[in-house]
Length: 123
Image (cartoon, rainbow, N blue to C red; front, side, top):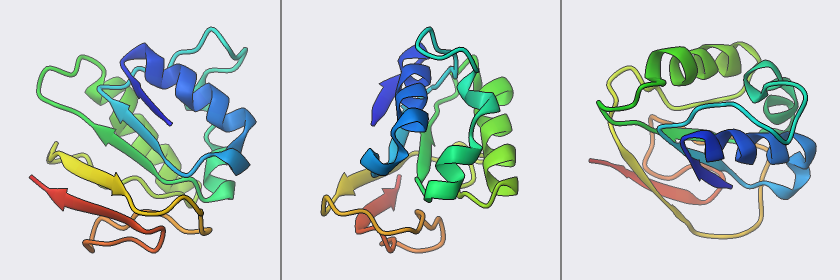
């Protein structure tokens, strides 16, 4: 799943309702608001963490929601046992999907290839 700005919120809302059908969520300067869901995706991350869905936010210095959205998601998701690569340095990571099957694991920010079969490079 992928979304930019508030479209990322809709991707999160769909993924929360269908975690078994999601390999990964990538948000570009994401704002986690949704018209699709009664509960804000930011308040409903436990479903994704329990399912082991990896999250990745690609943020640049112009992201108006970085502190209010990405930093909060990072903290909450890590507390729930999920993993979101650290966004504190605002580095961009490029992900290429290598296979469609999902393994109950998450993207590791410490290695080049995750257990999910995603490959990413830090730019």
